[in-house]
Image (tube, rainbow over all chains, first blue to last red; front, side, top):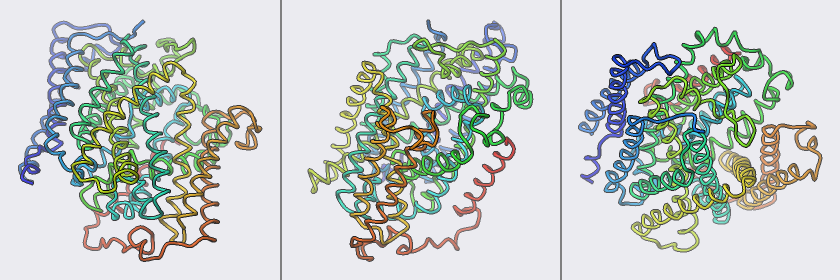
Length: 73
Length: 551
């Protein structure tokens, strides 16, 4: 039964996935600042940059909350 | 003629997803050693985890693609499937049915039928559910391969085998734990991967008001055109929506389909189990903000000549709307995320099918009929074997569908053969203690038979369509709604009549299973904002306000 307590909270995984993806997408956004792409209809907004940032922040929040929750239980 | 192309970063995003879910599977293996862990995820989930898994089990990629395409055809009416066609049934499950399901500590819906009625009713439902699940899962596999073939040019055999292998691997390792965990990851991927399409779409067309005011009334209204079937794209009236969709189909699916209800069984206590579908209802009602908005944007861009739908078998393929919008708005990097969201949706749906199948097979067929004295270890072993066999059967069905496309109509109709009658059985069984085992069994047999017969009769014109559907030329959707209605009614009436002339089970055997013989949950100790009834009220009010706002 001690194994149970060691199981990482589900939110840690959610945080990891969102954080890693957010990092990649933000990275592409930064790349597009210097080498703008012009093929998409809303390229002037550079959605990769801010959407990636939102994902990264959400990922970090979930990761930290998850770690905190796992430690508590 | 692929319409989307992937760069290195996109492939990296997709590869990371496969690595993550298989990694999760290996990680969870050591936590899935007992049957409680493997089949019911240890019954330790919070209502948030169970609630997100509940809504994700229903949130397949085909559903998202299909209803985005559906919005292009039917307009705002598609929201009915997310609002009146889902929320009331989910709340009813949480408030009124969950106490009987959860308190009896069953593993599956057929398990409830055994306790409430008898072995033969359970095995009948177990078999029909198992067959339905394998066939549906195979169809999903095939349709997924078709989507990725048309949109990305992927080889269909590779799509089928790679995704099936990944799902087989992580479910064999972690059972329902794996399924639930990946469903939650999928939920977030779908929002982060696809909601941006709707946002950027609204930015391009100038906002919600600009979008709605540019649409014809039949596209932009929810109820205003429901008085006359000719005035709305779906060809139905408000009565058909309220009764056919809102009652029989919706309640039949949300309250008895084991695939989704299984998620609530994993909650850690009764209150969490009751909150599971109630929390899920909020996420369900939010989905039109992806699906319907994307569909309406696609319709407008198409009407303005800026977007041309792809073709499939020489006909316009409306389901291409969402992939085309991804191609329109997403640069490299985000494209990978959008495709991963769809892949995750497909695979989580597949995982849901397989994890429900292995429970029903292991408990309700294998242990019931072949090995009553199976040890816990043996059941987990059987669950793993069933997962692998189930995956191969799905692959077989996928190839069957590839060879004979027309069988898909039959398989998709199975849904209403199994679920609509079962809802009548459950309703009587849970709320009327006089319902007998004989009534339940023969009612169910007759209801399933009727639904199947009506399907064939309408298809081959044995009887005129208006006898069944009250319309000379019903749409497929109308046929489906009416067939479900008649099957439900027949099961209900027959079960009731047979019950009146056969002997019911003694009341002491029904304690905890039937309304009136079960101690009501005492919630006076619980603060008001944690009570299921409070949140169900908030959910109902929200969905009413949404309906009024978009009237």
